[in-house]
Image (cartoon, rainbow, N blue to C red; front, side, top):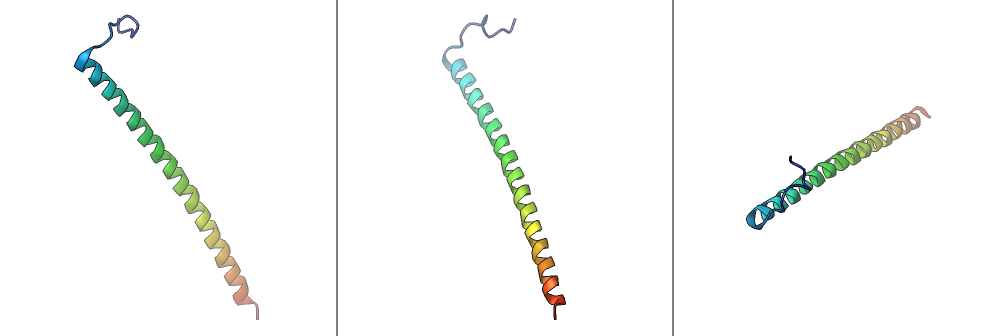
Length: 67
């Protein structure tokens, strides 16, 4: 019974509220997706930073051992 095809089109304030709710839902989904992309980017960036730090530490240790 809740088929969108069988329901009459909303009018007036009900239509405006429905449109506003759809926009709010899309915005929330976009924020969530953006947050996930940011977190993945930051994880990758942190991993690269740690790798570079390890390489620098190994290189420094090698240099200190040489007379």
